[in-house]
Image (tube, rainbow, N blue to C red; front, side):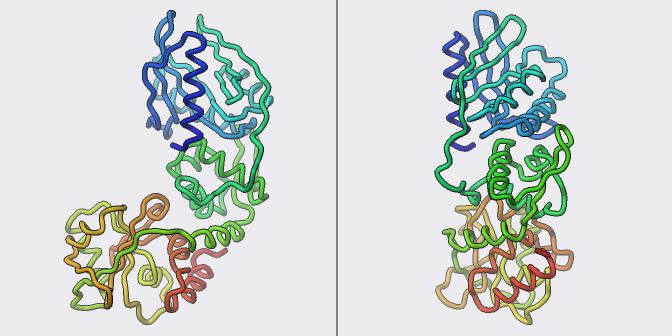
Amino acid sequence: MSNSEKNLVQLVTQSLKSVDIEVEATIFEVEHHGGYLDCLMHIVSPHGHRRLAIEMLRQAYPRDVRDAAWQLQAFMKDNDDANDIILMVAAEHLSEGAKDDLRHHHLAYFDASGTFYLRHKEWLIDIQRSSKPASRRGALSLFTGAREQVILTLLVEHRNFRSGLELAEMSQTSTYTVSTVLAELERREWIESEGSGRTLRRRLSKPTELLDVWAKAWTQRKETKTKWHCYASDPANLIEQLADKIDAESLESGVFTGAAAANRVVPHLTRTDTIDMIIPPGEAKFYANVFWMKPVDKGANVTLIERSGVSTMFAKKDPASRALLANPFILYLDLLDGKGRNKELAEQLRLQELGI
């Protein structure tokens, strides 16, 4: 959860307290059949106990709150018999149109200005204050944490129109994060839409521009890489050897990237000398022990790259080697490291597999 979301939850908590409603417990990322609820608060007042189900957004306009409303309704499908649940949308800024839509759908709402509307049985809170969108000091950083997961999902699905809820589920992020990324891409005019209301769907209109900007940011990232030597009776089949070991040990992680993995997707190089593998942060020694590898300064044939998040999303098994290969977009980005003929292979991969 981002700092902005945490601050928003604190503001909601403070506003509830100002009207004699206490928060007994706050649970984040509550799983339900339709996805994940951003926040569930257990609240109490002299009138009794309630649960406040909250979806969080950034700058929220009618189309954004409709997506959030559908997510709240999906949460309620798992709680059909509950009569103590209050559905709420909280945002840093709610437009007047968004507020009207939320009232129309009988949903509570809150924004960072202090505007607070909640009606449920004997409870009524109606505080209306003027709210303006946060001033923009510069372009939002799109290529960090969960936002990158949304970026990859948009690129993978660049030919398909998707709803905000679909993007949140596919990217394994919150509707707040999706809304934030889409708002920035719309500001750059890289998003196109179809439909309205419940049928509103969006997709990238300029995937090439987005991939180019991401590629530039990717080559500047800092990460932990370690070099190892693994004995291989047949160096040409080292990726199969490691994949077999992963299966034998029932390891849940271990995604192959770099030239060797990309060459399995678009055969282009006659020889690849090293294997690059993405593993969870802090697990290099564990994987080295599993593969019986030794750390070396020269002569390495395996590089372990410690990453989490977007790097392992949409990975697929190579039918021939049974190795779990990184998504082609991640393969492309990793090939931009300037090593050997990686740039040449990256161009081939982009032409044949990515198509943008």
